Amino acid sequence: MQWLSIRRQRGAPRIAGFYTIIGESLVVQVRWPGGGLVWNTPISVHIQRRGHTMRQPVVDITRLAQVVLALLAVAAIVQFGRKLKEGSHA
Image (cartoon, rainbow, N blue to C red):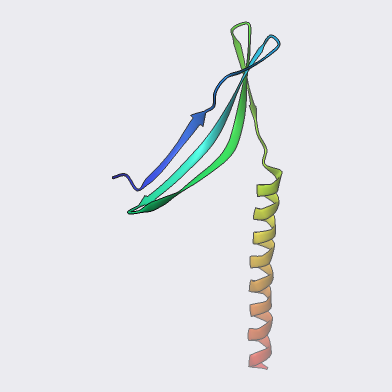
């Protein structure tokens, strides 16, 4: 049994006028006996018209904001730890 799987997956094609639109996502699966976890995130949209395909990346602003907040929290904790260390040596 494969316990970790990371892959790209394309969704079903959707027709909108003269365009065919296909979503693409990143799928991460973690499996263990009796259960598992599946995480999906959009990564791009493929737009086809007259045989030409254009790929538009999807920028997840929420995830970017979460990463920035996490990095700021880590920086604040490190800074706070340094100040406590300086205060204890005085």
